[in-house]
Length: 198
Length: 265
Image (cartoon, rainbow over all chains, first blue to last red; front, side):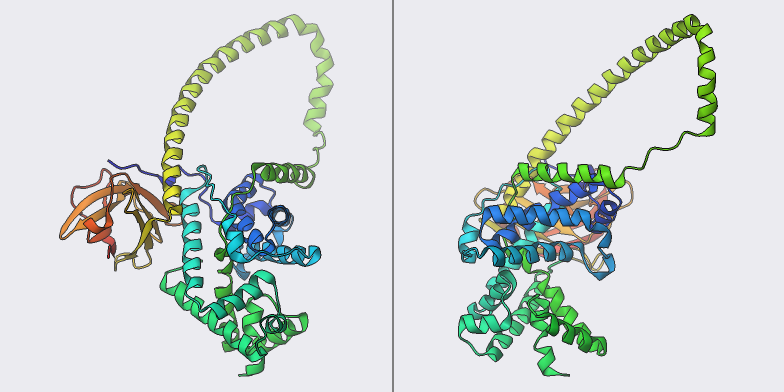
């Protein structure tokens, strides 16, 4: 006796790129579907960068507002919707972080603040894949040596330049270069090994 | 290969270069296709970094505020302007004043029409209500099932096993998540082809050479599906897992192509 979660019953089965094309034509239902799909991931990213829940929510709202206003500028051929969306969220988070000079919490502390409150009305296959991506990425990042992971954290989540990282870590610029390059190479290999999907 | 510029690739991919450095890299890769590929590979890897953060459901009020703003903007930007009255409408309107002399007959006809329409509407509403009640019950059952699936995905006790496509569908891949404490298990697959009518995918738990039917599923347009296995699954009790194509009602033993296989070690 099985419980069969039948995807055909789920109406939210359009691809991200189909949805954003609809949004560009003013379709608010398609927009809401994108929100339901990526709001949690966007808020998680903004919180990891800003370390401040209120600020992260502000970032999320502004990110989605830009998705709405600039949907017609999204060019599918230049990459996936997620790259565009996360790019906006990340840039806004780092901008806000710099503007407000908020004290950033270490990544592990902001992770501890998080409670998972899954919305059962979400599109389960998409949500499941999103969660698996998070699991795969965390496993991949944990496989990095601490010093390589730290360089990636400083660059991507704190928006620090290579010179700033060198200053913060007290390491020569060349060492920072090497660590960052090796980190991305290892991440690529790990993600390929796990079958990480775009 | 200019190593000085290629040193910048990583930081370009991580989005932390200055405008001058960005231009330097852009100019460099514009004339070197191989360098462009190396850069794109790094950008591709870096694009997965957002998944390092844990997803967090935003408060419902945030969505409401945003949607209110979006609806208001949609009204302004996407609502077409009122159409000008056509020549035909103007002609019909010019006749209306003359209708006054037939008013009693028109009112009687209209009343009869409204009575008939309301009766038909009441019947259709009754049928619609019954259909909606049935649909609500179905959705409630689905939501309950989905809640279990998502809890499984979030469970720290879940063991994760890989399942891959066979030669029949090499692009397919997925994960089987089993919680050895509670026995709950979920199969999450991607890359499977949509099947012709009358066919479904069937999931199998395999003990030695004996496959045990563990659920039927279909995939969505993107080839993805999630199957919650309702029977308790202790991963140590099984050697492998598989997916085959079967007739709509499912089979006791695999009869069609085996499209996915994975070990439980």
